[in-house]
Image (cartoon, rainbow, N blue to C red; front, side, top):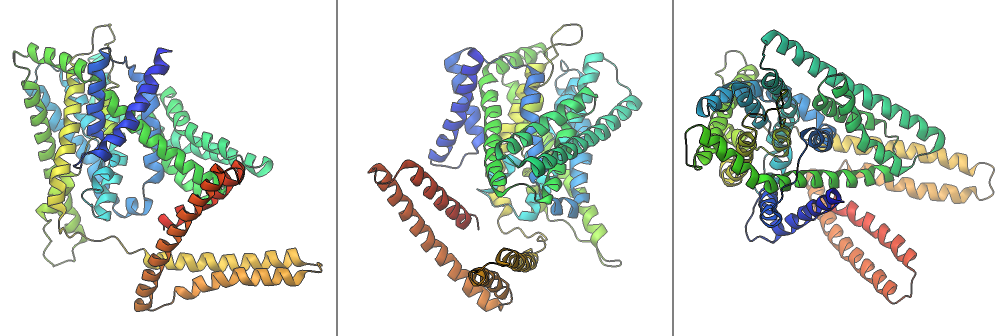
Length: 546
């Protein structure tokens, strides 16, 4: 009963954090509001939630990583794959080594394996936090896609490095050759498990749907279970459950191209996953705030063991780690962009120099968030002999400080760095969209012609089918004709479409209000009101998402 009560209060805190963020007179990233709210809860309740690291990892990480892999734009991922891999793998290893030795030098009471684990935990960036910042400081699409691709892969590489460091801390033994072999098994095994689990499950559910019909609720539940199934199977085989969840998400995006799911299933599933992403991210940050008083107390105790009596040294450590992270990232991004520009330059032409503002913006946009927090909270409570895991509270506190400062720094600095910044644009998708619309319209016309002939065959009212089919096909032919307009005509028609959408939205709002009025007056049944309002909602969603 107590666990259920705590869960409900956490969900309520996530809801309230959204209200608070929208009600503040200035722009504050939502994670900071959620951390502050969690700290306020801790002050009132005075009894922190007991977190089991293994349970926390299982509940929160698989769905987040799965959704990242599912939704990330794959064309941008493959187009900028060299840059993304340099950031997601090379930068992580560079950060783990450089920052790990620095942390151990600053805090001798933190063993080197634990320092490496902390460095690995703070190396992944968070796409959700970056997307939240992009609403305040619009990030160019190509840069945003690079950052999303980096965060998808460095989540896995950072957490795998953390796992290796934790094993070294638990056993007290580290072998480079064994670590390399373990890394390959973790990576290749995890990816293979994620791909096979998703492929097998999607094939089975499609086979069942073809023979027994599709139930939207079951289909959505299957999509929710896939990341957990892939993660648990990979962990059972001693592979990387993290990479299994990421690979499962990427495989899911390709499996969905079959288009076998019903439209209702896809729409409902999108809403369910959006809610889960918002809820899980929110709970993670609220939990961090709720754990802060306990973490500060434990971190201060570790600092005291280093000979520094003043707890303000905690702030010094956080600032130093953030500065080191920024310097390492800035250096790596500068070298990476120089190499990218060198490879892309024509022979004999002078190589272009990367803009310092682009390097600084890419560095500053590497915001830490939910993955870092979820990873650090999964550090073991005890070593193999039952003794407390060394400097665990300090590691969690420092990771939380990195998250907070990176969010604040990006919130303040990105608008300045991105103002007027010129970077190579993404390839325009207008021509692709036009070709896709024409191809889809042609396919629709052919399908309607076949269906019309089949339905009207040997029927006395065949002329009704012909007239109805012609009316529908005219809509598609008009769509094809509009794709061949001049640039000026396209601009004028876009303006007409904008005005038409505004007028349609006004009409839909009036329809909805009138239906609710009729329902309140009991002139129309609730079922009728609910059905008609759903039709209006779908029409409004189509207009607002166009």
